Image: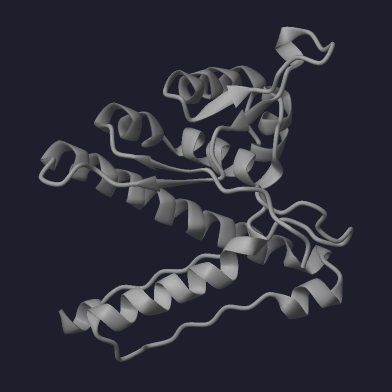
Length: 194
């Protein structure tokens, strides 16, 4: 596998920044920029089926909170300059004991889960447009494991280490037939046994 870029993960704990992200379009914009790389507001609008002015407003809000930035100018006028994520990944965790931050983080997690479901539904509706090799390589598995907290932590760290070299913002020189792929991993105690 080809070398990867250095990772720049940012931990977001500030309640104001968490609140700024707790908006469905802002979260989708950030996810899109992480997957697609630098894009203009118009490109974001087309991809996310929204208006350019609405995307522009929310991109500015993300920039105001330091989550995205403009790509340095290279002859283009300011309106056409693309935006990019400032990090290769974000972790959203409130400060310990911050009840307001926890509530905002819970809302953000709910939005993220809604977005995962929306993306899966959209894929299901569009999958027939893909070549067979892509349709056959997509997978949906659900496992019930028996683990201790330490084993669960070890498993998630191990899987993370395997996945991380393939992250879109980090991967230089990906093969020409590579395309952005969504991978969701949730691991939690089964609610029926809590």
